[in-house]
Image (cartoon, rainbow, N blue to C red; front, side, top):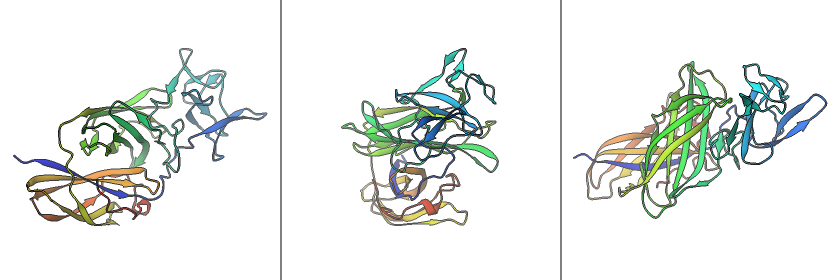
Length: 322
């Protein structure tokens, strides 16, 4: 019977994503005209909705800011939603809120640190056997289609192996209405040993008939204890380049250092920025990976979003494997 093993190879990526979502923290400001939200970097939202936790209670409300950056209050917004006299979005007179622990990837309310990409949540959240250490979500337009990229980083904090099972990514608009529920979600590696990290991800999911705009994701993941092996093979001679289409391309060799032939090998690649945040996950297959054999591989990131480019890929730690 042909077996499938998974090699988890990692390449570290440079620079942070320059996407459209704004700062992670800030405060309310007021002048004679009205209220606005000022991000810590001095910028402010305008002509858009924002989920904000202005009083630090762990609960975010949704606010709309006009073209000059001022908060709209006690009225109907240009896109047809009602905000109360405090500016918070309401439905049937009830203020709509999101717990920060549920607002998993919206950069406006996530507790992000360092040089994390916009749209990322770096707040560590511990569960029974694992921790979520990083989440990223971004909606973008490519070749006329609305698409999204999502990454969830899982760390095995248990004493045994864990299996990354099924996942769904529910996507909501700023008014809190679900617009899509994505079920075609990848996970690599499928089995992670204690202390290892694995990833749920979607590199270019299509959001059919959904216009460009700011959205947020609430994932549902199933991480289970497992008796399956977390087999890893050594990688060497790695280099990284851009393909003729501009994709990130990783080349190297992998060795079957066991006494067991493998009919099919899946190699998984994770691109990190220089701050250590993952910005892309993809993989490739190898056939006839026989015992004692060293063979070459080439992993072309053609399915990654166009903004995951070589100039954001660091050369440091390129040979690291796990």
